[in-house]
Length: 374
Image (cartoon, rainbow, N blue to C red):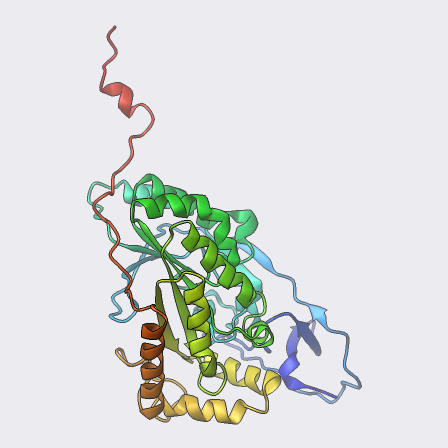
């Protein structure tokens, strides 16, 4: 039978076909809000039987960035300077708040977001140039505030590692957030930075249920691998906070305490959470995914989401957009605070050392101190 949640509308040479897509988060590829023509999936009546599931190939293109440090003035994100080595994310998390940004590229926040990726090949060089400017003043730099810096392509492109190498050479404080176990590849750099109080890491763990995690975050590391990453990082002296984000009422909120307990057992020292956010195109993508993967809970989940958002799918008001409001949001906050205290995860983020920042000498600088005489 035709299942609209599993199909994407593909338009080419004047006709439309319906194909099932395997291993992706979004269930459609509707046009971005800036495109002049809109496309959406529909059943044309020609589907006689379920076709064989197909793989959607990932493409990766370089992006010619002029600067690498982005700045924001949001009062509720916890940082004002950030670096995003990638645009788009192959993890395919259905709830990802970065999806709408793909519309600026003339692409869909749906399947395009997780299959048409961009990377910044000059990230390390751009960062070195920015940090070397005489007027530069150090502040915490957050890596991965938009899309995951350790998504699968990083395994070969190594853009994030190059950025961390520069930060370490400049003795610059930074933080990293990821839901990938690939971060342990860079344990040598992170452990060295931790010795000088220059780094903290946040690992996002949204569920311990492997099937639910696979559904929400199809190409991210399994929950057990993320727990193991927490264990290995903390064993090497790297401070780790676990992020239960997003917390989705009626879907994964019941796992809050269990996730924090496992993270604490693995050595995490802090915890944070964010209530599900559904701005712009994400609300339709999320509802479509719910109907496809969790039809028995879809209506209840959306009802609870609206109850923490003042009757709407989303409320972008600063101060409440991260946690929601109302009785259900209040209960969520109380449960989280109690679990943090119970498992010793209320130690706080801790301040990193900005005073160690130094612009390293360039080749030849050291020789100038001795002159050219003999």
